[in-house]
Length: 344
Image (cartoon, rainbow, N blue to C red; front, side):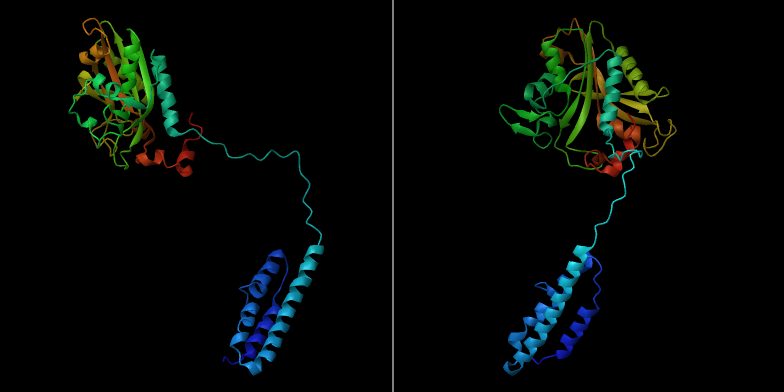
């Protein structure tokens, strides 16, 4: 059996008597510390079973007296606090300006998207849209992708079904096929939207991103028309001092094809870490529409020619605002987003 430590009870009694209760918060603190189920006094009472039988009566009386003291103190202070007059609120000053909630801003991708749409519409392009869930013909076959092209593999593309192939579109070029099949030249169209590719998420890649695609089809359209269109687009979007450079490349749906570079708007062509000290940064691809694509859409390539161009919205936004991590666009971090308030 446990030996009674009356000095513990006496010490606790002095604590209870010295405890200052001045408001509702300290009243609740007093109750939690001494009278709640896990408080100090119930803990003493739970030890009665461990006390020697001949001492239990005296021990119980001492603890019970302590409990009554604490309960009486709690009750008297509770009644005193309830009788205190409520704090009087100061009068409302109707001449003060109203308190307003912080206003939201436009997402940086939406800002640049609107700017691009305005530039293309001023150049005579009309906006078109298409589904994000596509079939094989509109996403691959109609665009002259060969059967063994890597983009048709599961590791590069999100397929929903196979045979027939239903997938999340890998580019907005599928909208080009839909417009060309349902309309006759001349056509000057563009589309903006989400696209999906099976890529690991990093600072430079994401499985979901946005593309801008434009094309023009008419009689006697040449590569010179494409060059001047891209030149005017770059100057409107990045500034009058911007220069462009076209490098030979390959795409299944254009021939000839080119990569589009612009002069670095950070170092003005002198060389920096953004342009890898070359003075140029890549923003997209372009080229003359392949005759096979025109035939797949029922357009005679002997009578009509056309050009097409495409670029990533995230890429352009990162260049305009010197953003180094692609993941910032989808993390919803207010510290990042609030920097773009009032830009559009």
